Image (cartoon, rainbow, N blue to C red):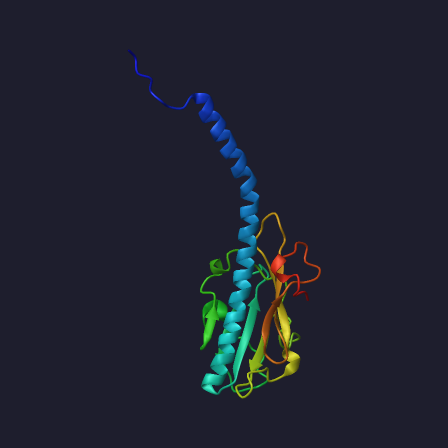
Length: 195
């Protein structure tokens, strides 16, 4: 008597692989969009974190601290923090070369995971150069000059969607994130935070 060996047929294998292929093809675009959203939110949250650390350092050191946002024409950007003695200092430290005596981020542009700054920051005196610089007062944690309030626009990494967020600093020195009202694609977490 012959024993029958249990297994799968070639047709069953082909059907299974076809179904898996269809499911993978449906999931890839959603995964890419998820990656774009998470990279943008991560970069924006990092900017808010560095800004908060700069305010804390001003209070801890009891010293004026300037924060500079530097951008390049390529969309590369960085944030640098340095001490200063001039409340109207509008010269950013070179955060691209880690020449900031308090902090700078990122160590390399790969840490932004493809997020870019498509325009120059509006923080500080925008007539002097392409850098956005604001000085934090150690006594109250706000800006030494309320008119230095401004923003930096961020654009998500390339992909099927065009997500954007603004990193905004108000006259009191508080940093927050909001989505531009003219953003081509909307982030669901920011429906109540438009700017």
